[in-house]
Amino acid sequence: MIRVDEEIACGIVGVARGFYGRGWLMGTSGNLSAVVQREPLLLAITASGVDKGELTTEQVIVIDEEARLLDDYEGKPSDESLLHVCIAKERGAGAVLHTHSVWNTMFSDIYAEDGGVRIEGYEMLKGLAGVRTHEHSEWLPIVENSQDMPALAKTVSNLLNEHPQAHGFLIKRHGLYSWGDNLAQAKRHVEILEFLMETMGRTIQLKG
Image 1 (cartoon, rainbow, N blue to C red):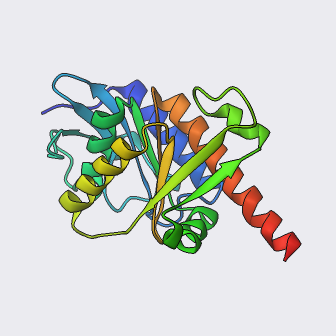
Image 2: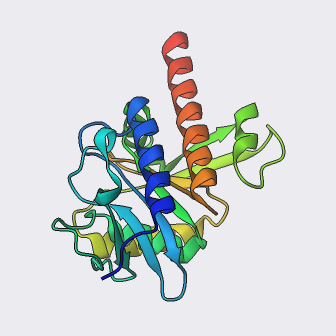
């Protein structure tokens, strides 16, 4: 059996509690992962059904690229583990984070028929890796939700190949996925995208 590195587990716990405090991981929603090793691919990921505000390092578990549990944890991996594996492979990501904020959930519903939401002209876009100007136009794709995780993982794989510059995507009436080269960068990307969606949403409200 394999146990996750303590530093990685502590990092995931810290991010989870921070996101919980911001209202982005209420109840047992969301899941977070970080790459333990690349070849063969192993991920440290939050276990299914755990409160992210009270997450412990023992609830950060290790899975392989088939989303199989590799340590002696009595529970099971997140139901969406295959999506994390997919993103880690397709993007070469070192960490993948999934949040369920009020704003990203509403945006995933309102803009679903458009296939995504365009974010442009905001200074905060420069917090995304590779973005150098507020004139950047970020396309945040939206996919339909499904309980068939292998099928959803395939859909996500196709989406990532269709939108190679995207820093995240939304699942309809579900939430946001974003990633980064490491946990710190993935956390920053989530913070940027959450800020921008809330800003856009509140702006629409004020104008409305």
